Amino acid sequence: MSRKRQVLAASYLNNGGFMYAFPNVHNPLTGTQESGMTLRDYFAAMALTHFAGKNIDWTPEIEENIAKGAYQIADAMMRARDL
Image 1: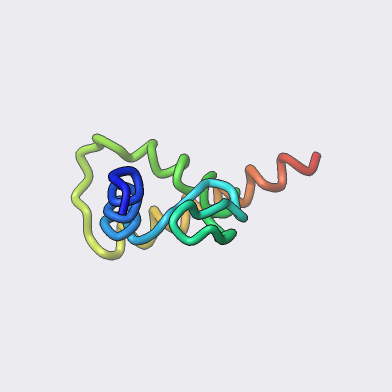
Image 2 (image 1 turned 60 degrees about the vertical axis):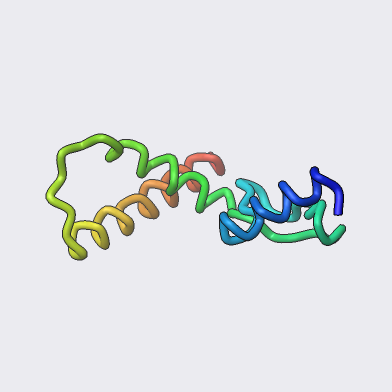
C-alpha cells in the first residue's frame, strides 16, 4: 500500500469516514461515490460555532436545546435561499 493510501486510510478510520459538506463525493480509497454532510447539516454546524469558547455549564438538556436550535437556524437559512 502506498504512503498516500496509508494516510488516507488512517484518516478515514480515525475520523469515522469521510464527511464532506456536500453529498456525492468520490472516496479515493474505494473509488466509489459516497454521501456526505448535507447543506442543512453544514449550516447547523456553522450555527454551532457561535457557542465555541463560550463559558456554558454544559448539561445534556442544554446540549439538546442548542442542537435543536442549530437546526432551526439551518432550516431558516435553507428557507432564505429559496426567496
